[in-house]
Image 1 (cartoon, rainbow, N blue to C red):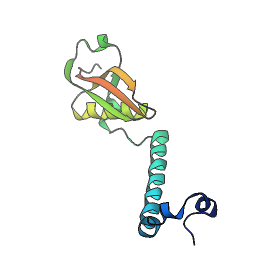
Image 2 (spheres, helix red, strand yellow):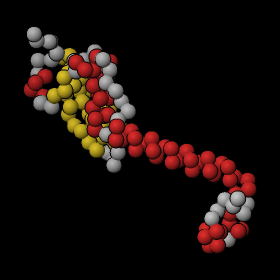
Image 3 (cartoon, rainbow, N blue to C red):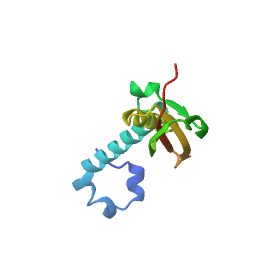
Length: 130
C-alpha cells in the first residue's frame, strides 16, 4: 500500500521523498499521530479545564480592591500562568491555600496569547470574622 496518495506522488518528485519514507516512514506517521493527539488534548484542556481546586482553596476569598485587605498581613505575591482564565485563577487559589493565606488580591490579569492567561496576585492572611 503506498504511503502517499496518487495525487501527492504525482506532484512530488520521487527523489525528494524516496530516501525518507523507507527509512523514517513509521517514525513520521508516529509523529503525526502524537501531534494530532497533543492538539486534541490542548483543545480539551482549553474547553473543559484541567486544574481542580483543592479542598482548602474552596475557602479562599478572591478580591480586586486593595482597601479590602488593608487590615491583613501580606504573605507573598506571585504570578500564575495557565491555559484559560479559570485555570489561572484556580492555580492562584491553590497556591494561596498552599502558602497559608486565606485572601488572594488580584493585581492584574493578562491574556498572553490565544490560550494562556497570567494572573498576578498578592496572598494575604486575614482574620476571619464570624
